Each structure stands twice: as C-alpha cells, then as structure tokens.
Image 1: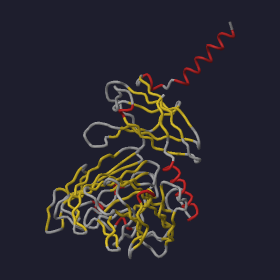
Image 2: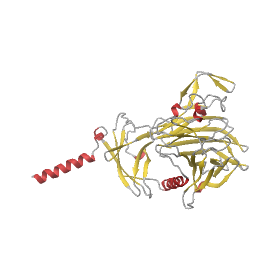
Image 3: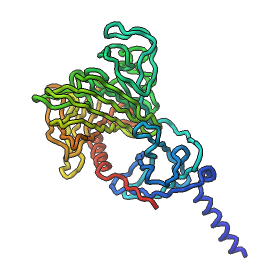
Image 4: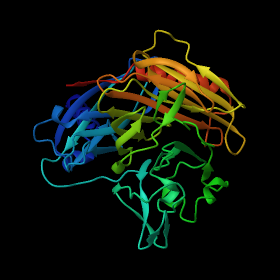
Length: 414
C-alpha cells in the first residue's frame, strides 16, 4: 500500500510539473520542437511562426508561450497592417546543438493579453498645431503617429520631425534615419537597456549630440552612407535616395520583442531613371542588428549600402569564403564621443557585386534578386552596458552572428 501511495505521489508531482498554471486560462496546447544546429549558445533568440501553421482556430489575441514552467516573452505580429495577425514571435534560449519542446497555449475566444518588459520600440513624431513658414515649421507640439505622408515643404532642419525622422531601438542600441533628401541612417549609443527614444529630441536637435544619462548620438554621417543607408552605385560613388516625388512612412510594429518601420519612396530619380522603392527595417530584443528588407520596382543595375569612412577606424572583412552571409565592418575610436565603436553591414554572398569605396563611405554593392534584397547592419558601442571594448571581441561577435544566420533555428510541430 505504501509503495502504491509513493507511485501516486510521484505521478502527481510529475503532472504538476508538466502543467503550467496558466493552462487553466489557456486550455488549448500546441507543442513545438525547436533546435539549434550551430555550435554556439543562442540567447534571446527570436522565433517567428506563421499563424497559418498553427491550429485552424488559433487565437492570436489570447496565447502564451511556455518553456517548462517558464513563461517566454511573446507578441503577435501584423505584417501588412491590415488588422490581422500573421505571425507569433517569442524569445528563447538554446544551448549549442541543443533542442527543446515549448508549448503555445491559447484560449479559443476572447482577448487575454500578457504584459512583458518592453525591449524594442519604433516611433515617428512630428509637430502639430503650428504652421509652415516657407521650409520651416513654426510653433506646435510633437505628436507620435503611426503613419505620415511627408509634407512637400519638409527638408533638413525644418523642425517638423522630432530628431529629423523615425527611430527604432532595442535594449542594446538605437537608430534613426533622416527622412529628407539625406536619407541616411544614424546611431544612438545607449548606456541603459531601457527604452529612451520617446524622450529624445523634444528640446531641439543639439541636445542629443551631448552625453546624457541614457547615451547620445554617436555617429557623424555627413555625406556618407552612415550605417546601412540605401543608395545606388553610380559613376564610382554611392548616391543616396535624395530626389523623390514623395515619401510615406509607417510604424508597422511597436512591440515588446520586435519593432519595425516601413518607408515608401515614390519616384526615386537617379541615373536618368525613376524607381519606386520600399524599405522595411526591423529590430529584435537583445540584438544590435537591424534587418533591412528592400523591394524596388523595375530592374536597377544595383543597390548599395555601406559604412561611413573614418581615418581612426580599421576596415574588417569576413574571412570564411564558404559562408552564405558575409560582413564588411569597421572598428576603432570613431564615435562622436571619441571612444570605440564597431559597425558592420552583413550581406548575402550570392547578392554581392563588389566591395568598394568612395570619398565618404566603404561600400557594399548588391544586385537585387527579382527586385528584392535583404541585408543587416549593426553598431556596437563600448559604453553600452557590458559593451564590446576591443577589436578582437568585436570580430568574434561578428563571426558568431554569421553562424546564427547560416544556421537558423529549426522549428518542428509535434
């Protein structure tokens, strides 16, 4: 009798361990096996799953992702801003060559959202309540919006857009681009993992060029490609997206673990031609990488991107010729605060036309495949919390990124 009681007790404990308390509220379960085929540990790995791959009656408004007894930060993603969710995403940790089974639990009806720390952000803010006087906007107050058709009066230093364009950040780093004729990407170095962009630029453009508790603008862009800016290689120089008929910008996702911004450039006039170009930039929690997806109508000879040239920085190239992904990087005391800053553009070897340079930039010239190109860019500042402080560590970090891109996490439904 005592033996039977012991077995029943063990079975009860095992059952308690297998059933998460939230499963009472989210009674339906989908089991998913995920595996890491690379030889490095993966921390804060973002996994995205198409909702159509899940149960037919899956409810993206009421789900939780659990790993054993641990609840994982997650969010539903609307990829095309149509009001319907197409993906669910969550963060997980996997050991090298490791595999685990996670559970997505959900309620078939209702809306039951969970709260997680916000580790990414995307925003676009412009003034309202004032008026245009020639090319400057006078008066008014800044207001965050999810969509904007850029007014034709707007140019650089019009005082209309807070910090001159849209911004996006993770708990590691922040970025923005100048949404005017310059169309170049800049970097906000962060000394805190907290979200900071909502407080930047409210008192003018100069304040964020000085060191604050949260960090500062750390890159001098000038006439260059900054970090990861879009251009075309024409007559031995990189020419940015300068002259357009119009520009629209939308905050596609402003989530806890992933945020993204989409920008449409209509009538980009270059090389005696006109193109419609769409750019989507995405950042994930725990990551310095911005993913840039480009789509261009017609068939341009090339698109290019790159990194600003600084005399104090060393140019670094990936040395694994067999890697599907490659990088062009720089490292050195090239921040506006005169401390170490690493920058990199990561591209597909199959899309590379050439690595080159002009007066202002180290350039990656790419060939679109059926009008599409995807590349990544990143910045690693030594004053980040636990920041990268030397070239050797930066190179190791970049090599690990290539391993993750070359070996995406495998997802299998049980």
